[in-house]
Amino acid sequence: MNGKPLAALLAAALLASTLQGCFPLITTGVATGLFAAVDRRTVGTQTEDETIEWKASIQAHEKLGDKAHINFTSYNRKVLISGEAISPEIRYQAATLVMGIPNVLGVYNELAVSPPSTFPERSNDAFITSKIKSRSLDSKKFSPVHVKVVTEAKVAFLLGIVTSEEAEAAINVARTTAGVKKVVNLFEIVTPGKAKELDKMTQDDDKSRNSAPSASSGDQTDGTP
Image 1 (cartoon, helix red, strand yellow):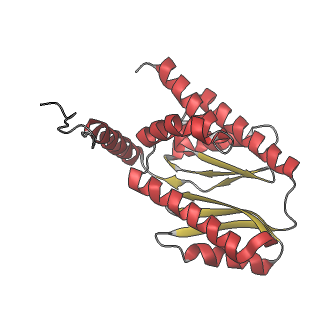
Image 2 (spheres, rainbow, N blue to C red):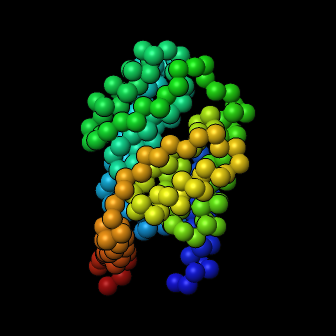
């Protein structure tokens, strides 16, 4: 695949990830397949991350209710807790809740003790995230698919499995994006050799899944002799 088609696919996937809350039925197939193919996490770890986020959100709703506006972002089984809590006690309860979920390896508790953010403030944060993703694609110094961006109150949190060079480039993009007040580096740094190893492993895993016979590809009969 040459550069232009790949760039187009990446752009489509990045846009899909930004808008997936609005258009889940349209974007899921395209975005999930592409991200799984290039993500440095295994498919199993990606599934665990999604499960952790889901469980955390359900438990937070049940136990904390409207006492906090919380976003949970799990990457490689380490969870970023962002948003706002009405008290230090609620902030602590949110972290305790996440640590009790199976397979969680660590927690970054970035909840601010403050009233919940407004809809315009959250919309602005989403817009900042989209700008960082777009500028990451334009920079061509790292794959934006390897970088997870979460913005809360104009603070950009960066997660991912990246090399030191990739991390530096991503941080520079976020730092110089209009509207960003602060950048928080939560990257997991690996050597270039390890990054290549992870890239090859996920590509091989994707090829293996795509070449495996589907459940419906076996012998079938239509009732005719």
